[in-house]
Length: 166
Image (cartoon, rainbow, N blue to C red; front, top):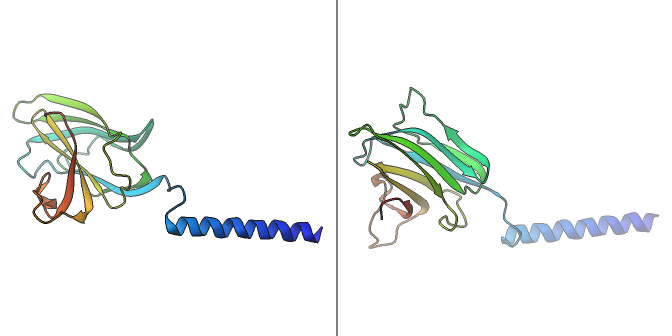
């Protein structure tokens, strides 16, 4: 009986050690949770719109969803942090202020996001009926690389992951 308990303890210790080594080396299956941010600022970069509703999702799971409050009036959604699963898409509903027209888009992120989103920002910009979704990376942009996306992040590596106006 004692030899069986000792064997089980050794087996458990071995499995724990193997998991710890693989995890620290980055070889184990990655955790489904990542720490990233979702943001928009309609008062910057010549945008003339208000966001009426948005929903960042992972499959059928809503990760971040909101009808902006009277306080923000749909002009900003900065500093919305998420420690959660990888997003698979976003729904945005907005109003173009000059024309008064309302638009909405469902954006599928499949194949467009980096593997590791830790420290990244999913940033939305709107110009009339045009929707742009950028991935702002936590790294500096390469020397000589042109700046794209929100001016506030001109020093960072930025990728355009969606535009409905190609």
